[in-house]
Length: 439
Image 1 (cartoon, rainbow, N blue to C red):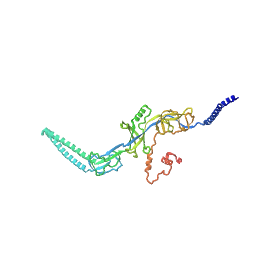
Image 2 (cartoon, rainbow, N blue to C red; image 1 turned 45 degrees about the vertical axis):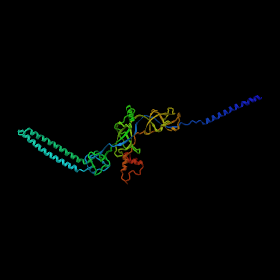
Image 3 (cartoon, rainbow, N blue to C red; image 1 turned 90 degrees about the vertical axis):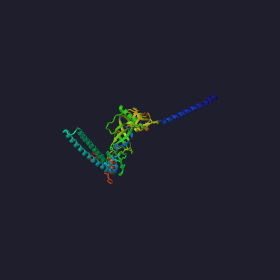
Image 4 (cartoon, rainbow, N blue to C red; image 1 turned 60 degrees about the horizontal axis):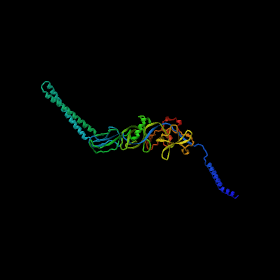
């Protein structure tokens, strides 16, 4: 009896331990069942279907404004400046008189040249008569050949002296005409660099004023040789399509971020690279009817250098970044489950990233609702209705701004106090919509 009791007592701790283990496992199973997620509806996400579309190759490059033509006004004769006839900062035409130099010395020089011409012409008449007389005597054999030859040579010498006197007179006329310093080109003249009473010298370095042609006007932009060569290779391989030769493919970004009102045309790229920067200059021609662009002004040019006819692009918010900065997107597979797809992105055009690799046409990319999904989760997709992206910049309307600025002070504008919509309707022609439809 005692031995049986002892054996049961020794076995009891093992059975108690096994009981505790069973109770603990049961409690864990109950907690896991309570923590297991209850299957719910698939989250709804907004997607876009990737499609091939023509997208321009656009670059923003720095540039400087340069005048179309520039001329320094200089005097061609020496003399004292007696009058300035132009208004500083005004428009002048080619041939307009800008300065007057004291003409008195040149008038005297012209009179002297004319007197010398008259003297040589009189000598020529005498030489001609002498030659005719000796010719007649020679025909009657009453004069020698030597006498006639001397008379004929005297006539030729008199004719040469007359020609020289005429040239001297013409030069004196030119110098007298040069006392009116005229505009060599048409354009806008700057400030007067010399005043009345200044003595100028012929062939000197004194600049009287500067004239610049500003409409149209040049913008010289710079691009690295590497980018330009890659662009040429892409155009040669057909990856990019060339633009039409007469396409206005450059827009200017002003200091305030607005776009200049008119597009420019790329004329040429320089054949020499700057050895210090490794950049090439590209010259663009812009209209400048309102004198908004000034020579020396710094601008940024948005230039369209080609068109990728079958580009793939996704909205910017669709691109996710990993911890090391690599780009990836959420893609919805055919079984409606999502997965992360690494992509190689190019430049930003409008509000879209250009996709170089990682996606193909027809892929469905998640744009909205990425915070609600995890990899491998089934989702419900809603196709986003994205407006057709207009890749062309929208310049501001400078004509409208100028018309408002030209309004007389104190005169109320016709659309003052109206809402923006009413102003837009008022600016349209009467034939834009029937009277009954005008609000």
